[in-house]
Image (tube, rainbow over all chains, first blue to last red; front, side, top):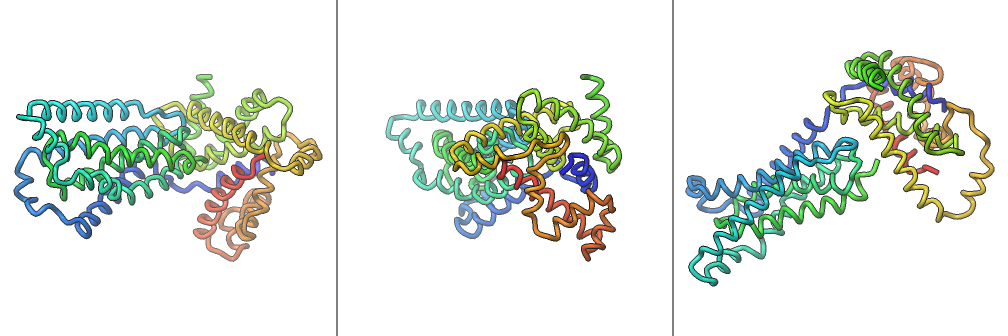
Length: 212
Length: 179
């Protein structure tokens, strides 16, 4: 086929095309909704939710995971475009992660004894926290990677990683409605691990699924 | 270079606003630059050059919403072209491990005309019949989308959707069948 003919055909196909920002925002909204439904239907909210929402730690936890989600969004919004690096998002993500880990370590160090520190680290749900965040993030990760396929990431692994960070952050924030843990020590380890697992899964899938 | 950027960006912006003539002019000018870009990097394979030009133009079209209009348009288009070239090389490496028949077919291939790609025809031939007829009516006989749709027995709106799907399928098939 002649290239000129192809161009004629392309010029006939000029419907409006939504940009990455609008599409990623939609992915975030749908993902949060899916995670919320899963929490309500499967895990149920923590029984003292109303009381907890009056405390500071509930919101600190939500802020931490939400910021990880924002970092993922900022990174993927750039990485969805050819040549994008997502540096701003990665810097924010690393900064927030480092801060939370520092707070967690500090909280463990000022605890009265080693047993108390270990108790904080294990909490009541150390074995289920990370896998649950991963599970809650799966619908958003799937929809997000599918949406990314319609965009133009030139670094598929990194784009998948960023999409996973975005999904994990959103899912982690919703998971706070169920999870009663309230120490930085716990959050720094298990929440971060859950979000990072999601990011790693996104990178793994993105590596082969995001080529175009 | 700056002149090219100013001109192409203005054309592309008008194209995104629905000005089909400006859009066509933008893609045509881009095609010329892409041809030179790929030819410099792929000496001795002119047929592949045109396939890559066409594959890149398809990608530019289908991925146009990922251009941030506050940024340089030519830098964006260059990033698309660069990705397509690297992808082409990467797939070529895979292809070298394929059976010898492919190689014989490659040796027997005729010297292509400049401005004509073979891969796109192959991809086109593999489309469902309705989509194929629609694309060839629109591009070859110069019918409008409404007329082509009427010939295929569908409304203009349905023709629009079908054309878009066909172009997406073409992009996907060209990528998979690259060789």
